[in-house]
Image (tube, rainbow, N blue to C red):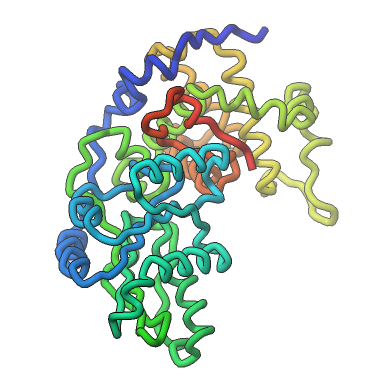
Length: 386
């Protein structure tokens, strides 16, 4: 029997008490990650910014405000700046125009980009050169700086710019490319290369830096969820609890039902054998490796069932925490993690796998920050599935 979910005006109530303030999310305290290199990098960036003719501030399109380095805004706001909302392929496309509209209202240039797409990056460079048009006729050398918090895609952007520049200037092809990886804080020095002659235009890459202390817990959790803070600093389980709370409050698993009706029906009937056969030529066994699409469907079905059967109140912290506990158990089955696994190990494995699906965009495209000034803030928190 499907229970009645007591929602009330959940998102409206959460304006007064957001998810970061709920007991099970606050338990670990504020999220802070400021390794030694960030302090020296902050000083170096401030010094170099004085020389920059244009700054490209890269932010995560899923968290356009939370991915801001507040300590640099006093300097950046006085510079010729373009805000590049990267990872637009992971953000809700129905919300992006509201964010660009928001920045337009502040008279701040803003573009949404995908740093892995040369066409997208070429448009950004064309706009950057347009912004430098007046100086191009006067200055022999111009400098563009790329800044941002860790893991927003600066290195991917720099590498794409490098490929474009290498096509323009083959002699640069042997220059070292930026290191790209899933872990934040990979780039730890400032490096640059030329992208144009007459005048010479150089692009400088910089390390991703955070503020020494992130006072708002939810901002810290959003940064951790999107990968700007190392998982080990916050704990995968805590990040997963936060993500599940978001999905439940937004009723996201209920929307997944329409996308997975056929698989869901098979799952509810226990007819998984027909639904999840391995590809032709591969043998199915106890250690069967599920293909990513099948894993996603099983995860979505597990969360749909637990939420649809939930008869508590999502506005009640205890009820929401109980639901999340049930969902951890359901996800353990969905990921085929053996029941005999120690509880802590199982939860850690569930968390790693679930966060990986979210970060790859397999659970859908999400915008986590509400658009400032929106009449209906909760609408900017909606999601759309890829």
